Image (tube, rainbow, N blue to C red; front, top):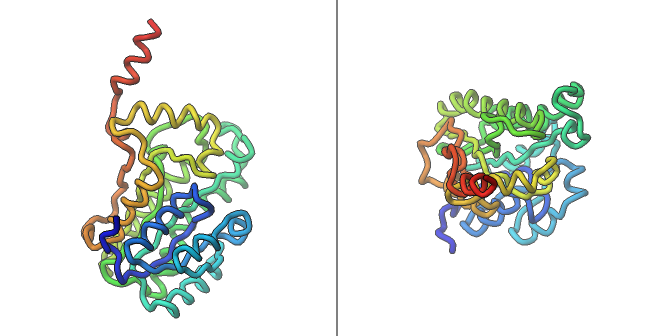
Length: 270
């Protein structure tokens, strides 16, 4: 069901790769709610993904950009301004750890890979906002979002340096969000349940991870579609005064000490 929450709004969505991507679901829902947007991803990700199919479905333009490159971002935002004038929303759904991909243990970190990971996963968010800031291309009461995970606050085995990347990402949102407030633009992060995306599934032990989160969440894990619906509300005019927040969208996981489901599993073992 569509409510027309984003009718007339324009934006940029970073990070859609395939139908499992949260950004893909966000794009579909934004389109259904009346928004127009540009889809962007790194050129290598675009070659791996199916972005053109999403663009056709949503009537969107695809513009490749490496979000760690100021030059690429300047070209992207110039194209957005030429197409739309000022824009109303940005989604940053970008994350990558070479250490995770290559199975490098946290206690034996490759620091060159670490720098690449935090540049892609966190600093790119600052670069996106910096270019948008310098070009003054956000409408008042616009909304900038990045996707994160609770590993920024809690320790999870094998999430590795992505935990540090997410903590950095959330800090950038709060710090830059203070300045964006001067222009009546809000900046938030959404801390989503573990979600079986292409990136998420690459974390060692992800299946057990997913099952544990399901049992520890009173409402169960939030799906990619659930997250997309939440992002729509945060892009809409219904959340104008929500800013500099890390918003947990996880079925209650973040507030649960233990659930009866988990207690019952331990009781059954005794």
